[in-house]
Length: 110
Length: 110
Length: 110
Length: 110
Image (cartoon, rainbow over all chains, first blue to last red; front, side, top):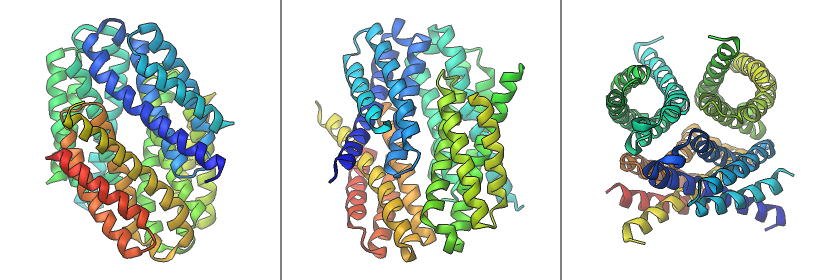
């Protein structure tokens, strides 16, 4: 497996983990805790990040010539989502998977 | 256009309207108002309904042999979402599009 | 309704029509006709265009701050898909909806 | 982690692997090889299977009360897709991931 294939595989997996971790935390933690956890911008960012990861996985796994657009957007949204999760607090798992996903998407977009 | 093609076209449109109406109301109304609008089961139902409509449109527009499963599930989720929106209140637009989508998905699933 | 809301509504509808038209043509026409209709790059573009429209509708209807990225990518992919459909021939409906979608996505991305 | 949580995690991963494996094989192998690989029913099943896995992951990771509908439909579609891939030939990787996904989705739907 070439380096670039390995990187794409890693990026796909990081996006998949990010998508399902955020979905799980949003529905089980944020919506149960309330307060800052359901603040408009925070939840919108969580939803955007889930959708960004999902689209990114699709374009990468279809070997699309256009995947860089989706990796680039995903990296930017993951960064903002990680910052929002850090501010809200109690969401270390989300912060971690968003940072990891941001890093691999940035590399794939380059 | 045959009756069944007309029905499918209607069902696709009702699902599309339902998906975008719920996305808009969730992010602009529910998340701004808070309180019962961000209650765990309500938001989960809104998200499930958006995803159910989205999947349903895909299976119908791809002329899939399996669309009935997705129409059936979509009808059940739309029904529950309409009831949740009625209970929360101030979401008449959602109630209306969920009821309409439920009706056409039930017909398509038959 | 303000001009920008009207434009967003139009763009959402154009993306939705494009997504379902391409899904229908791909499964009913391209896969039935074979030949150039199932040429690798053409089908990949059709699939990318469906996914691009789908993501774009989600980001616009969730009132996302990041919708411009998805409108921009969708415009570029619609343009390439329209050109591919023109080259293959017999796909006027696809060419038309791709061009229309490209135009409104470009406007929304600006 | 309870047994049921472990099963859900496994099922999510099997769906994710199935989705990306099929996307990759469809775009790199089927569309390059042509012939039976691009036969209408085969490609439609591949696309349905990708969409079924995608929806299934979403409903499971959002801890939805409705996930069983999507696991059930996904199991049925995976079974049909595995059979189609076996008939076409040269798609052992797809057969394997579809069978694995079918098994875990059946268990989750029960």
